[in-house]
Amino acid sequence: MAFSDDEPRPLDLDDLVEAAEANPLLRRVDALCDARAWDDLVELARRCREAYERGKQLWPIAEHIDYRLALEAPPAYAASVLTPAAGRFAFGPLTEVAASTHTFDDLEPHLPSPQVAGVVAAERVLRGEVLTGRPGAHAEVLELPMHLEAWEPPYMLATYKAHEIQAPSPEVTQLTAEGSAAGAERTARRAPSAPWGHIPSSSGRSTHGRPWRSWRGPPPAAARTGGAGERQRGARRRGGRPPS
Image (spheres, rainbow, N blue to C red):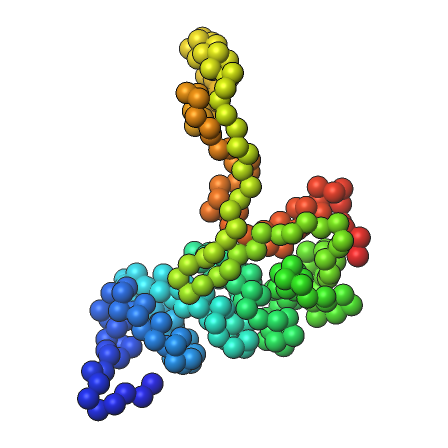
């Protein structure tokens, strides 16, 4: 990155890593992404991981760099971070993040394994690509057709940003507590005499006439995207592998 003579130069990478302060490091990550200095970004991630061996807790910075590479970098850089252990603390699986901003044709030459290729291909199919008959898509990995079927519903797909995720709200059931107060009172009277294993657990519902919202399924943070996994679960609910 070039700087004019009268512009204050930021700390070099060694100084930033040794200081081990998150905010200056994150600002440098943003600057490197804006400058599209991908090699420098990869080097910063490497130094942050090495610093962990010296007791500096910089692995979150390295994880964030992997996320930014998957999201914003050219295909070769994005594919380089698509490993099984990557992205555990990111906004979403890095295969999904990379697939949200890159086509399969762009990523395919750089994908590290058939397993990764199969997952990325499935994510691209959710976004409208038709990859039927493409050996490199490795449909056998998730056993899903490489095109969307007519019977499939719209999938909840996240939009990933540098520092946030924009995800559709989960479906909820709007109910009211009318008529349920008596039942709740009977349950409360029975609970003290019930065995511990049979005491009804709290649902967090209000029984004072106010509406309550019920989520059926995993917590919102875990269901922020449908993704290929949700498509696979939908296929199982239909009674097996969907037709190809």
